[in-house]
Image (cartoon, rainbow, N blue to C red; front, side, top):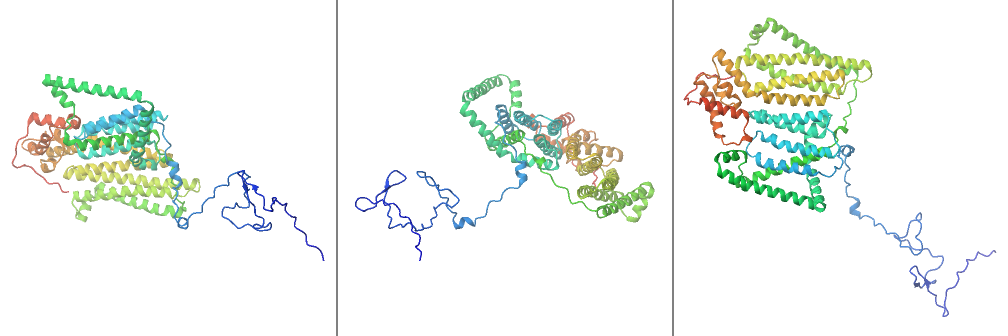
Length: 573
């Protein structure tokens, strides 16, 4: 029988009295090691603080690594916050550089002018408020190293040109469209977008930049208050002294001369205590708007990086067959229109039982919707068009080009119907507006045809520019002035006039209505004269040029009181 291998004995550390001798610990002290309580072959108990086998134990004298606590059971079941999509990081603007002092002064000027000028109405005051806001954006873009490009200058000057419409015209609809379009063009100038996504989201992103712009301005003010107090305080002191001198000496000069007092009173806005809350709201709106513009100009969102992938290409038969059938339907309709135009108009009216005005009015609205739907068809068909090679490209251009050309003929037919209807019943605001929309839709079809033949990278900007130019032309022409002119010409030709309708027009119509004979002239101008007299105390910056001219004409010839208006004629609406 063989002997089992013996375990080597550990050296004894017992002291003179047979007790275990203390061993030095890691801290330099001593610890009693009880060999009986912990045998050599004993396995240590598992512990949460024991390092895993693949981690080296700490050296003697080093602190053990901190133990990472396990999550609580209720924390393991908490839903994780979803991460934003990848495109959010792509379009997020870069952190802008510090705000310039010139930008801060321009923002402050915009807020003050908003509080002082915008309470009394719309006129040249909108342009006066927009100028310092544009300067704030320019200074921010210059600090960020953004150079103006041709399209940027076109959007900027186009927006300012649109703001001249409230200063020139009195009608409400052209003013509203001009202000909204000016804001949209300003957003394009600040963002510099070239895609459809940037065109559509430019104005909402500008509104959303008010919060980041405020934080950006406060950060710049804190930096200047901490390190540049010696430069800011003298400037504020100089502004306060200048304001005090103007108030004191301006009051003395106004009390000394009545003519100077009248001029000064017409130039300085009349601010009362009761209007204080409204002035505060306007100040805040001007401040936030200018900060949003400056922040966007310094670091605009990059919407052009968001690309919409094209649709899955369809087969030639699946794609082309519905469009060819639609083209044949358009061709048949146009052939019927040519037959009617060449001599079958009376026969069509006799068979349908419609009056000429009913035939024209009914056809115009249907053809307007046809034009709108064709634009949708062109966009959808271009998205899912076959893209297999040169033959597919020729097929797409031929089919869509034919549909676009046929649509232009439909647009011409719709405008011809509107012209017939206006000859029968006169011109109104609604008819001017829808005819202008139809003209613009036809222009969009032409732009899409050219883009399909030459490439469409410029198409979004061209459509936006055409819309802005259309709104500007609509405002400068003034639908009220055009309606009054056409109705006066119709009265001179037929002897009929709807005086009840023309009384609802704005001051833009006064030069044309002033040519009517009495008492029809006074009957048509009576309501306009009352409104202009009620608003006679409006300041110069809230009065349009059309209102000023209308007051001069009415003051020169006056308006009589007429009990009943002769020659009234109701339009068939």
